[in-house]
Structure formats: C-alpha cells, structure tokens
Amino acid sequence: MKVGLASAVAGLLAVGAAVGLTWPDNSLGVYLQARQNHARTVHALEARIARESDPLARAFYRAWLAEERGDLAGAIAGFEAVRQGAAVERPLHLHATLRLGQSLGRSGDPAREIETYRSLMDRHPGASRLGQIFFHLRRDERSPALYLLEEALAQDARDGSLGQYRQTARETRDGLHEPAARPDHRP
Image (cartoon, rainbow, N blue to C red; front, top):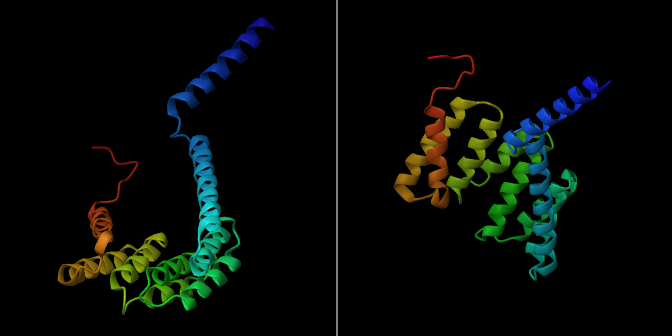
C-alpha cells in the first residue's frame, strides 16, 4: 500500500515537473494562453465600443466582437454594413473589408472571401494581395501565395503600396523560400 501510494505521488510529481518545465510550450499551456488572449481581446473590444463616439467605428468594433464570440453571421452583416457606410478612402473601409474577408473564410465561404480581398485591388493593392496571400497560405497553396508575394513586393518597390506591411511580406516570402522542415530529417 505504501509503495503504491509513494509511486502515485512520485508519478504526480513527475507530471507536475514536466508541465512546469515545458510551460507554456505544452498543449495545456498553449490552450490556456489562447483562452487568456481571447478574453483580453473581448474585454478590449467591449471597452472600445463603450468609449467610441463615431457610430460607424462603434459598429465596426461590434462586428469584430461578434466575430470573436463566434457569431459569424452577425460579424459578416456588421462588417458589410460598415464597409458600405464608410467612404472608400477611409481606413475604416479597408479594415472592415479585410475583417469581412476573414469572417467569410471562417464561415466556410472561400469564394466570397477571396473576392472580398480582390475588391480592394484598385485602391489598396498591397492589402488586397496580402489578404489573398494569407488566404492561399491557410489553404496550404504555396505557389499562388509566393507568386502574389513576388508581385506585391515588385509593385511595392515601384509605389510603396505595401506600406507598413512590407516587412511582413518580405519575411513571409523568405519563409516560403526556405525548404520545409522535415521532422524525420537527420543531418
């Protein structure tokens, strides 16, 4: 009896030590961290809605909150309304369009998602291409993503269209050029 109890205690201590040593890189730690991050995002969106004086911006944050809470239909309707109500030259129009694309993708409508990103091409070619690039990467379609990355970076060299996303585009392209890591590969 004492040996069994000692063995059980030693096992629990070993599991506790393993969790402690690998925290937060273990699946439980990752899960808990993701939940904490999600809760912080929801709280920040609620606070932003409460203090936002612009009705259109408030609608944008409400749609985003709906998306975070899993109400994709509400998020899609909200982002579409904001996109229609915001002047095309306003950053809010761009942000609503990008979030709309993400919500459409999460709701299982890839055709509307990619078309939403493409609709930005005339006024926001950098953002349009980045939306399309990440669409293809989520679907594990490396060739179209790499093609769009090269195209986006070439245009950016001419007109600066990637703006603040230039470094992200470069790092993504460099990551796609690296050979895929194989877990069973040994030097």
